[in-house]
Amino acid sequence: MAQLTADDLFRAPDEERHAALDEKLRQTYYWIVNRAVISPYYDIEFSSGAPLTYALGDAGAVLTLPTDASFSSNVLLPLLTFAVGGKCLMIGGPGRGKTTVAVLMGVLAGASADDVRRGVQQGQPQLTISDLVGIPLPRDLINASSLAEIGIAWREWLTRPVKIIDEYNRIPTKTQSALLTMVAEGYVESHDQMHRTNPHRGVESWFFTANDDAGGGTFPVIQALRDRMDVTVQSASFNSRFLDELITRVEAGEKPEEHVPEELVFSPEEHARMRAAIRAVPLPSAVRRRLEFFLSHFEFVQHGGRRFEYRTKDTVTTAGGRVAEIIDVNTGADLAADLGAQTINGLSVRAMQTLILYAKAMAWFRGADAVGVEDVTAMLPFVLRGKLLPNTTHPRFDIGAERELATDPVSWLADLFAESCRQFDALGRESDDPVRDLLTQLDAGLDGVSGVEASRRLTEIEARIRSIAATGKLYGRDFDDLTTLKYLHQRYTAYVKWVVTQS
Image (cartoon, rainbow, N blue to C red; front, side, top):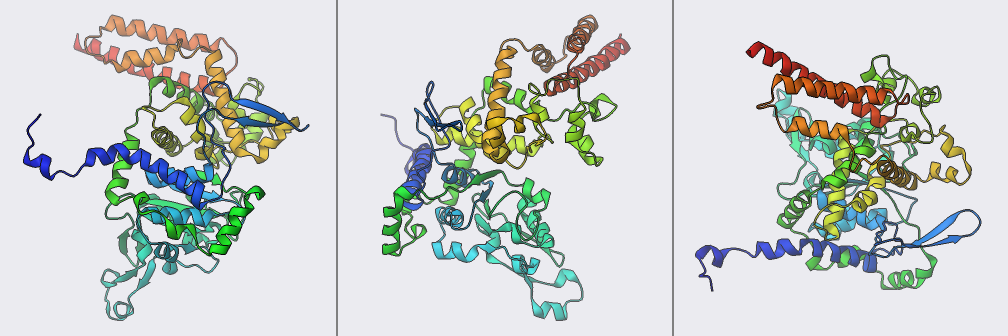
């Protein structure tokens, strides 16, 4: 047996606790759905092989029975947000458990239920910045000779690891701007004083609630704040078959957040380790390629600008144009095959990073060694809801049962990814991706590459551009490929010129 050292004797069993963190998060999920929130809905589905499906009624409804463990999105998405330190927007009508779920997240971080409820910021039309962040000390206001001498009585909720904003679409626009600074930058300012909102230790997560995400509310939500929501999840309706459980809770007069088992509470150190473990989950090349292909569809729009690089939806939008109108005049592509024609915008880098993080969290929660396509499939609709916006003038939203997708963004986004994967397979991108091969060649470095070899690669790049141009139709995937080929061409052109100067 190996001899123990002093370090072994005094070291806390970190390794054992680390190995159990994913199991602890799973136990937390099952406690919430079995004891805290009545949610018999399993809309995040996983299956080994084809699931059982049943056609129901005459309106095209289909019931799917997944073959692997599946989950309720209105519980799992907030829980994963808690795990990664994200921002979750929960939408749904009054009394559907949005605030209860958010309060549970605060209790999981170690606070009492009463303290969490006291820290909930209630959105209302009279909410001022001072109400939200704190007030200057009256004594300093009288005696200070400059703003720098004014002390602020900061609100205690600002540094909590779990922050809850109830009905954020009822907050005045000016106060929303202050909230945006907190959410985006992790600090707040008042009278030239700055206060960090990140907790001293552990992980910070935000939970927002709203009755809808379609512009309703007392005040419109500023786009920059709406864009900061990492995931958006719909609260589930009550299933009448579980009325007995509801009656039991009424008779007991107890709230589930007041009875969270102590063993399910995460310490700041556990929370930090959990987030680090999630970030470390690998994203295999095969999954990256499919995700890369999906992201390529949406920014390009024909006739968006004269210069090729400017033919983007962002160019049209920032110039005050209407993307849907530009798409309508495009006769150079098949609208049914062009997934980008179904949207009026592209995707931000922030949205892409968030999707990667939540896919990692989903894989980690399920106990997988690496992210699978199924993890991306599960998280993508909730991450991109409110970020990838539908082009409602597209013919797809006008055809029979497809009209349902106009009011069901989660299903529409899931279908977009499924169709992208079908196109990926049809094009054989898994095994035949010349642009990827050219990028990989450059990534290997230019040390030892001769001028003749660099010129040969330039010729290969130009041939690839001619091949794409010969198809006569351009799609988003072609836009990304062509701009990448131009990038490669410039790199090799500069290198060839440098080789000439050295000879």
